[in-house]
Length: 113
Length: 110
Image 1 (cartoon, rainbow over the protein chains, first blue to last red):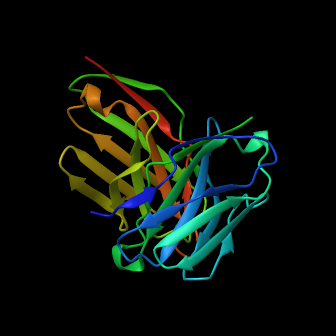
Image 2 (cartoon, rainbow over the protein chains, first blue to last red; image 1 turned 45 degrees about the vertical axis):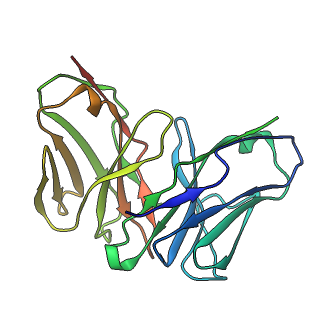
């Protein structure tokens, strides 16, 4: 089974803090993604990466950056957290070999106060 | 703007009935379609994928695709209370990315 692990499940951060959300997948998938999910807005793509050190902006990249130094690891960075970034963040991975089916991690609940 | 539209629901069905969930998509270039189930407070989990026109069956689930009408549906036979969840429809929208609908909430009453 595909395993996508988000190490931080529940975080509370203060406005202005730098926040790191880490994600690791164990299936050697080329593609990795960060989404956020908010009530009424659904899943929105923040950034994705299709190779090590490669990144592409999604639909809502403002206020976020990402890092992919190793194939299995994809980090989301909030440079200066704001209250409107309170959300559930979902990491995911996929590979063309499985029809680009996206598999999600368990999610990270971030509250910015 | 590529969009996937779903009725937000809730769709209420009695236990044992067939639940029918529908989705339309805007991008005619989409080739792959997916249904995910999401329980409250949990992450989405894949139920089915479909790539060709017609029906695809997996246990109690049947996905249907009509590319001419840009329409995807999911039928759940013999619905169970444990099927109560939000169902997300997704279509591929470019290199390896998916566009998701906002989901339909399904409530199955005992």
